[in-house]
Length: 182
Image 1 (cartoon, rainbow, N blue to C red):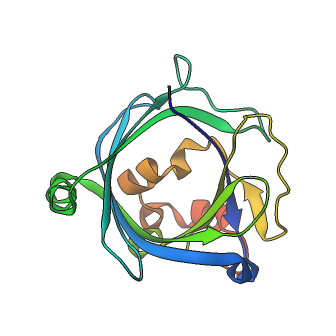
Image 2 (image 1 turned 135 degrees about the horizontal axis):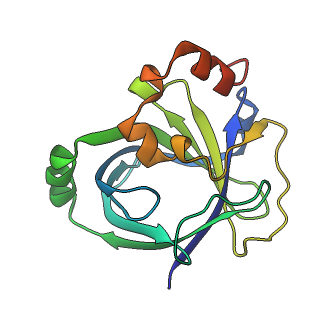
């Protein structure tokens, strides 16, 4: 079983920029999502240089019914990712009723594989850092610019943001979520 073990954080400010190792523009669409059970995603990523990358990804709860992890613990899910032709990804994106776009930055931080997503369009100005871990109980040094942990908050998953973008949230909910300086 392929496991994805990650923690997610809201980001405040731009101190993270000194850690950038690379980036890519991402468009993704959701073909199926359901109550924390199955997510079927198509993703098209364009690096600044090189060929377009396209993947079809299935995510499922790691062990039975999906549950939110306790605070400070990683979210663990089954994840199966398959490379597909870019033209197929374009066609599947057109079939996806729920989409989002973002720029993903690879970061040079220790303790896991760190990436940072700057959401665009209807989900701007949301910025989220993620770290993929080898173990759910793995210790992580959290940078000061990570303002709040959002691991397990379903309404902030990419799939949820594609269905209910930040732009349509009531103003008081947006203000409560976004750290000052966003």
